[in-house]
Image 1 (cartoon, rainbow, N blue to C red):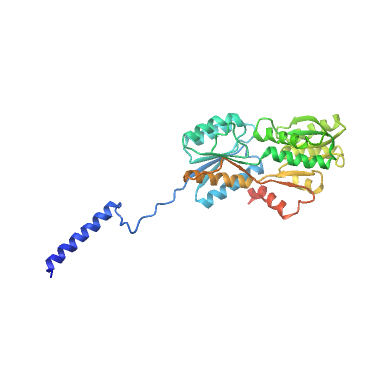
Image 2 (cartoon, rainbow, N blue to C red; image 1 turned 90 degrees about the vertical axis):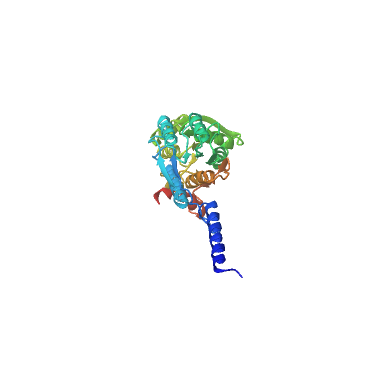
Length: 333
């Protein structure tokens, strides 16, 4: 039988062993590990401009994702969608301040590719949304398939025009990926309609009044014009106003892209026969979410095609149309 002194000796040795085990596990007993805190990141969203409800809807999506994840996101954009030097400066400043990642809608694909590639190599992930870079050096690209979408809405317009006559395009620029791809898709979509002849394209530079003047010139110079495609919201509005001013609503089909300015009433009235709706809120939400996944060491797809919908006077009041229009209204809360 052990004496009291022996019991005290064994108790002391046991306490020392437990103490050593605790030290070896970082000062905490292995049975009760301390859970590491989830890191919180600060990201940057840089869009083409800050002057459109479309980009504010992208921002609303990014804000919602950041809030859900417990992260933060800043928003910057040039006042003009053609101020490339300012956008590049904003991007480079974000890299210099070592933000955790950047969501970018590139004004031009080639000039932004270099800065994006350098950021990715420096360990700052970049997800491009809506408008990507070329070559595709970003971690992921989240956008509408603009060639397919342009083809779909123009083919719809060609059918409404009876599959014959002339058609023209009012584009917003020829330097962004969207400005290049949508007209390309439009011409592909109309190509099967052999009796439709292309008369050319004018550039509105994102100005409704310029688009209207260009469309009026088209209509005056080409009496056989049956279809005009406006490649973005402002281009489409300009074309619609020209058709209305010249009282050609019954003979000329106007189709376009987006519906974030004054297009919805004109679609419901039939002045605009169709418009391709995108998912700007989803782009912002997905882009921010992908940055968080990259920071967590998880893979993300190189390309994500977001959903689209062709809104027409006949379906403008359906639940599906309203769900897509809500994407554009997301910026209003």
